[in-house]
Amino acid sequence: MRTAYLEGRSIAALARDHGVSRGAIRTAVADLLPDHTVSEEDAPAPELPVTLDMPGKVADYLRTTELEPAERAALDQGATVRRGQGYTLRVGAVPAVHHQLLARCQPLDGGQGLPAVPAQRKARREYENRVSALTP
Image (cartoon, rainbow, N blue to C red):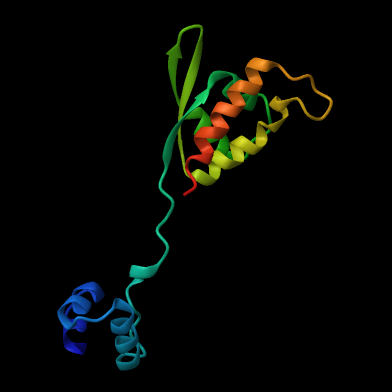
C-alpha cells in the first residue's frame, strides 16, 4: 500500500482495492508516512458561483447603497434580461455573496421608518426565495 501511494495511487483507489474505507487508508498512510502530507482530497470544496435572477427593483436599490467590493463586482458583472416593463439582472456569485446582497436589501420590506412599496417588497421576497433555495 505504501509503495502504491508513493507511486501516485489515489486514496479512493487504494480503498477500493483493499475493500476498506478511505479513512482507514488515510490512517494507514499517515502512520506509515508521518512526514508525507495526505492529499487534500478531504479539503472543503471552494464555493462555486451560482447564477440567480435578481428582480430589477432589487438591483436598482442595491446600486444606490454602499456595497462590499465582491458584492459590487457581482452586480456590475450581472447580465440584464428584459422582462416586459422591467428587467431582471442575472447575477453569478458564490452563495455567500447572494446572502449578503439579500441582507442589504432588507429595507425594501418597509422597516426603519421607511414606507413599504408593495412592488419592492414583492421583488425582495422573490429574490429571498431564490437565495433560500440555495441552502440544502
